[in-house]
Length: 275
Image (cartoon, rainbow, N blue to C red):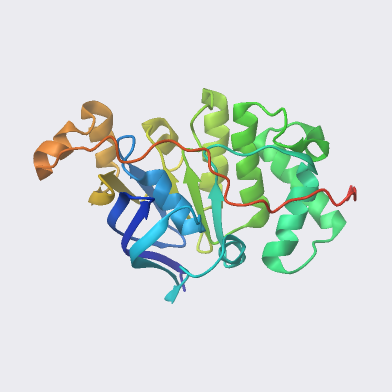
């Protein structure tokens, strides 16, 4: 049986500004959904709220995982239930090695401390698949990483944690062609009956590697149109003016500003080297 993540009539604001204005979305494990839309229409806000960012105030609607509301759950509680967010702007955490962080996250989300042998084996395998340097485990989390390394490191964490649902917020931004292919293929290879994915992207190129089952167009804080891959080609060729004309709506580009948001500090240096 598939797990289901459902967003129902979600409305949200930050301070006095209304951003989400009634978002409806249902994702099942085994499915890939892509959300596209102009800048400032609420896409990143939606991803942050699903993960539990407290900066935003939910004013109506609900988010349910397998029929249970998770609105009252904290970020870590949602992570333990199997929700994962790959950041648009991954934070640097000096003093915490990449391997320590991931192993601690695995223990925190599963409640089981992975054996060192299995962890190293799986970690090295993921590094190879993502074509990342062998010394990554000993480097501090994202410190001194290139933009592309930070994005691939988010996918590394996802591969190790094996969530039910991953939200990838513009994971393609800043990636060169080779890195985009590597990231896309690794995400695509994870999709199965136990894993579903929500992609937030502006670019068709990522969707050449991760084939979405559903494409949603988000404008002015709402999903205004849903279809298949034909929408991607239409957006690539004509932008979003045709949506505005077809649905008779104006696009409010002042709806959302880009923010570098960290959901919470969940890592610290224990002084232990697990390797």
